[in-house]
Length: 285
Image (cartoon, rainbow, N blue to C red):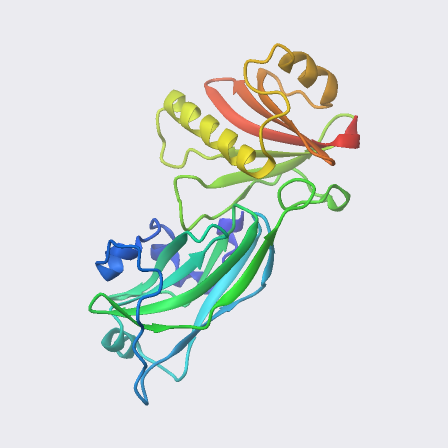
């Protein structure tokens, strides 16, 4: 799973990776909308840092690795003396700021990873804080997150190995972390399955309602209004006719169609209801 391949050094990240994202107001004490706070100029000999990434063009839901480097060899004490905290900041295409604290007190993270859940252009940088003031900001990196035939995948690059479940770490919203796996139908039609894992062990019915609505909003935000929406009398017939694979105990809830892909949201009733997104290539049937 992607959560399991965060590189050997990510033992340093475990504590940080389990936390939710940090509101900037928690770091700065500023609840206003000051998008460009004044940053102090570092003194000669002061620590400075830079942000690095393993890629600047990312497929949707693909694992992207980030790291911090300093201008000289440092100890934990050096960092703590100059900064109360260091945060990783991401600005999305709508100018919304998302932050994740990578260093504070005795917790220091030098390498971390994230899966971007929405396509678009992002700007990202590191910011250091002392006494609730931003004292240093790294250079900004520009990232491009792209979609393919379905989310971050192309049908003509479908993996040979099927069935392996992969989790997508979401540092900015741990309540919405997707898991996916691929499969081949009995007729050899490739398909992708997407769902939210009930990691907190919530009541199954309540979790179904919450995850079903979250998946619907997620796919709609990326692909627009369903071509056949909830409660349509055409829904069941279209699902039966147009899709090659039909899991047992599945009820279609909405269907989307793009130039390359058919997508359906399903309710699957076994021991308890679960919500799933399933996608096939448009030419699959």
